[in-house]
Image (cartoon, rainbow, N blue to C red; front, side, top):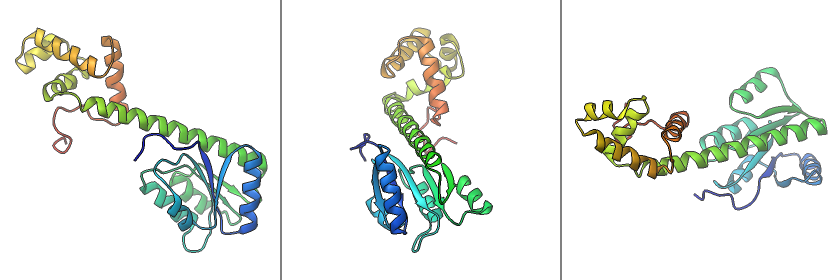
Length: 220
């Protein structure tokens, strides 16, 4: 899997109605968006790549695979693009199910141009934010993997706000040794002050990375 998209973001339109597919493709293309059109969900999934960026504009009711089934399949993939549902058969239970599944929006045909463009803009912004967060998470993971087991033990205690002398006492080491470990940790994470290290450890926790000295399969 590549970390960077090969091209810019696209709007992937999935609709079994040929006239709707043409109309939406034209509207979005004229509005400045890169567009790819598909007549079915399986056709789109056969083309979908891990490096794709953008959003999916999908009809809710389609043969072979519904929009909700497409949404669920994307959610299980390594690249769950934001989904906007567009349907002539909208109802409250279905829209609730779609939103709970992570749908960016739920629009009813015939959709107002302004509402559609606003939804697409919001979905692309969400995808861009998710992509950058994923890159950051991978970089932090790469840096974390550079730490030695002892450095991870030190970092696990730094996260809790303990001082060098407290960490030294807990680990049965000299305070100078703990200072050296902390300096090495800062170098590997490319931070230059205790304040930056504190912010970084908070970011690790926020991104879901457990700062635990044990291998991940041994952590609770």
